[in-house]
Image 1: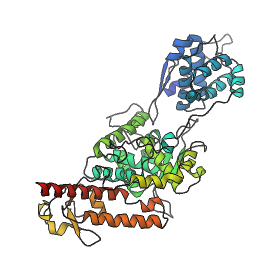
Image 2: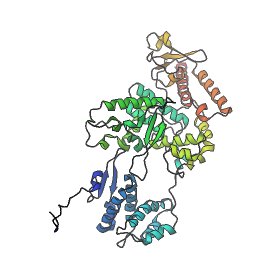
Image 3: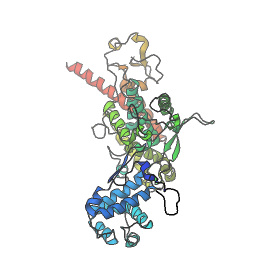
Image 4: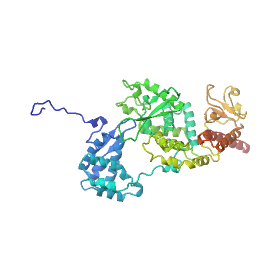
Length: 495
């Protein structure tokens, strides 16, 4: 078809938002990404405010997408839909609509208004129908409180707050041992170490690609990781460089080599392939290959079930979540004396409002650690995974006399049933190894007492908690062995 002047036919172009997987006519938009799909639902707005306002909201949301991330758009639409369930409109969203909504919100939910403010201001700026200009006056005239942040950190909540140093050590030690014996996959263990080392959100970990693992710089042997930023308004991929421990670097290097040989990514450069990939045999889109936020969360659930640690604070299974590793990193940074601006950068925050909670809790951290370690004979259950035996002869290990584990005090504490090539430092590392066979009458309590004395000396010398608490989880494993031996001896005596 041509116009009256005989010009060339008009080209029909594909709307740009189709590339995001969006069909404007749908009331549910699904936007796939490396960190997992984002869902934007317009159904509540249509049900409560009608078709005209819903279509206007879609137009504003599509324009919002031009410079904002999917999460930012989804957040604005979500809280607008939430508002539609509580207040009616007379054709348009007005200051009266917002005042009515404000009056029905409890004080702890007033921050909901702040979530719709940016979206409605943008909507007005682009002159889409459906929002009255008096909305701007409303937002200028009222003070909208922010969301209350950091309650779990302030209270050191036992299931939602940061781990104690002993808990974090215990998780790492037991997961490492479970990985060594094949009960935990390399990918799951690497996810745990990545969360612990970087404090990244689950979506950030999912977004990692092979090109994010960087070799050491000349002046150092430390590998580095480009951690993708998230919760940013822009759709542009941004990263922050982080040094990572050797153990994590080795695991990621092993996975990257697997991706290099992975036949599911024909024609895709290795550096663009996901580090943490799903197990599907083929993918329609590269985004689908990433495990997503749900995949990271599922990895932690599997780890939690496998290592089966019980918290000394609750007596229940120790809860693992990405947020707990994140708040632990912030807490430890504050404890080490880092200023808020450094903590904000470490946690990928663009401002300081989210990090003050870590600095506020700093004075009581040492007290909480000591409280967590009070009574070492009531340990984190599950740290010790070996088998207590009566003596060397009952160990069941070939050439047992040559496999003795010697304590620093000079006494033998058990038999090693693991490979002779093991490079872990005996005797402390042995107490969290499933191949260790501690003897019933060995001096476990004496070894524990020497470690407690060393801890108290370091504490009195004013060293940092990371130093004097370096062996806290191992001390709990030794305490667990000592307690099992005590109970076995009592049972023998009463038998």
